[in-house]
Length: 563
Image (cartoon, rainbow, N blue to C red; front, top):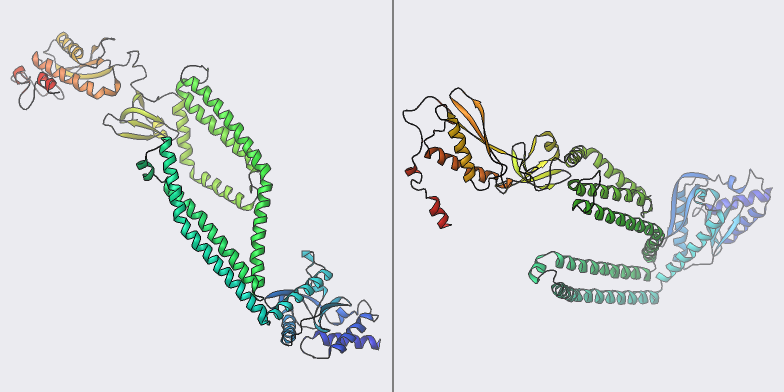
């Protein structure tokens, strides 16, 4: 028992790292004695040293290379204090050119790390990260390998010949990299000019666009940007490879170069593996895309035949065929996206899910008005209230329908303006379609005048019908007709109903009709009482025929001749 106690005390003194500088022979003898002695399980060497797990960790590094991670508290000394003591011993050994041999000796419950028979530090079970799958034997072997490599590099850094060789190789690498970067910069302009010349020749020969249009477009700028991006990537690759090589040539910076090289290799490997693993999923996505595209084309052919009258359907009309095709196409593609989503590379990653949730929230909070317009668009389309090309009146706006969209209706007014009316506004307004029955001649356009009771109503009827007959753009069939809409206090309201040949020329045709009405009533001495009547004038308010073309007006014949 006395021999056992002396052995334990010797190991404690050796593990005090830097506090007691006993001879290596005494340390080894006591460590071996402690290992061979019969120590009770509760009173083992680990328990005698008071070894316990600490809440902190300290990585012992030597010559810029990690050696081992201390996690245990030994004799009240924390991991950082143990690491500082071990670092002092390593510096002292390196200063004396002691680089080996490095070996490990097993003691009760731990491992002693020795250099040239001198104990530097020990590795205990609390230093092992069990959750990471480490074992004491594995940590010990890795520590010995790391320490051997660090000591060899420290010795290499003190060898002038090796340093001169490293400087020469690094200088050569920098020179080669500089020449490569210079060459890339020189060929950049020539490659860009040659690519631009080839593009201009191919596109002009194909007849897609002329040279001026091509140069004014952004295509050539895109090609130059693409070449620049490729060359920037090549420059970055050259710089990265050169820096990695230079760092690996010098012992102290070699770990950094190895880390850069490992990072690049691991990144390339992960990308290659990711691409290889994504091939089956991409094939499934491609198959879904091709099937959906085939179905969309079939729908396009069928709905196109319905729109042009070559096919008929009981539930689809020609004017609703196009929007129905768009709706079904959108639903098909949305369904294809939902089916293909699990096969997309990275669809299971947190980043992909986060982006999906973010887009979903944006659509949820910002689509209330959008959904209202879309639903209103469906109501406008499937109620068949409007057709493209019809001349309509929506609220206070009159014009020709040039576009029926999901969100709005566009009209072109007679002034050449384009009016955009949201679908929700269209649904909430009264819409009048002047063109729906215009082809059958059943759409009548009214215009009214008020005439005094002293004018024979039969004469007024005849004058209005004669004005309609003389007006270009007014249909002869069905015939115009006149109604006496109201018998007012001082005059009668007469309304002439005519059918127009072209509803888009509505205002211009009515302008000519009103001019004809004034001329005929003036010619026959019938006074128009509009808009108000206060009393009978001394003489009828009519324009004599001789004054119809008072200056600066010109006669109809002279105007026609000048045109």
